Picture 1 (cartoon, rainbow, N blue to C red):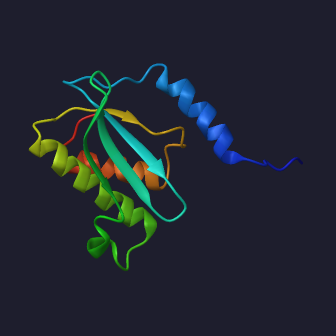
Picture 2 (picture 1 turned 120 degrees about the horizontal axis):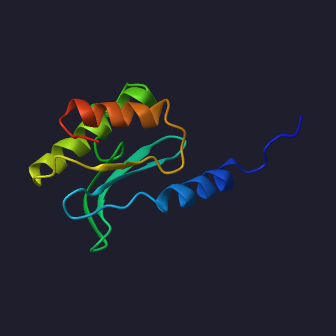
Length: 120
């Protein structure tokens, strides 16, 4: 059995493949997810103008995240990013999972955003 040497390189290839199709507009921007080993980050991006409309991560909401698991923290980040997007008048987004498999923290972030009112 051959062990993978660089999982992140494989993720970047998957992400590039997905980004050919996933594109955020002014009306329906892209919700982009980045997952590090200890934190998770989310941005709502308008690809037409090349602007980040709002962002959230576990570092900015560290007071709420204290003492919670990484999956629970990801759900809180999803709720936070959805709240910020709704304040901007955005109700629909395109979800960009960043080449990550849709499970665990990525799925928890998406569930949190949906619970807070975002549609995708």
